Every structure is written in C-alpha cells, then in structure tokens.
Image (tube, rainbow, N blue to C red):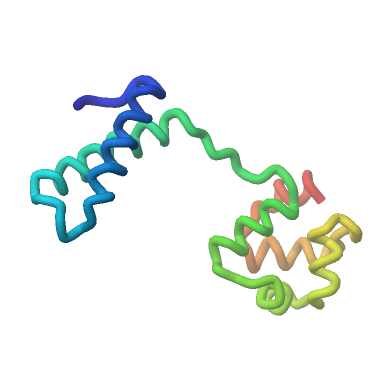
Length: 121
C-alpha cells in the first residue's frame, strides 16, 4: 500500500493494525510484523500531514506543556521557578497576574520565548 490519502483508507489501515496486534506478539509472523511496521509508518505520515497540533496560546498552556515535557509536578515546577506552590497555582488558574520576576523565571528556567511571554502575560 502506498501513501494514505483519505480518512477512510486511514481507518482501514488502523483496523488492520489492530487486528494484527490483537493476535499478540508471540502469535505474529515475521511477515505480519513487517506489515504492522509498514502500515504504522503510513498511518503516522497521514497523521502528521492531516492532524495539526497547535501550540498553546496562553501562558498557562505553555507552562503546562513545558511541565509535561520536563516531567515536572506543580510543586517541582514551583521550586524550579522559585515561587510558592500557592502563587503558581493562582497564576495558572488566572486568579493572579504574573509579576516580572515570575516571567523572567519562566523564560530562563523553562526556555519560553520572551516575545510569547510579553504578549500573553
């Protein structure tokens, strides 16, 4: 099979992958394993082309994304940014405006673009 062009073909490929994987790793032949790899690559290419993931558009969103990427819990992030957990929580929930020191910490510690911070704070 060549590149996937339509959603219906994508759904067919995903169903085929699911049926092969349902057999279990010990029951899949080498040929079927190769087919799974091939189909998965086709599906991945289609997803990357058709399903755009937009970057966060809010300060809280970009901070949450960086928390996820860095595998940080909120208390660990607060420590990294040198703020209290309560202050971080208030800012993340939109109940307190971030101050300049907080924004500087987000820029330096989380590597968030300063232009983004200035336009979204």
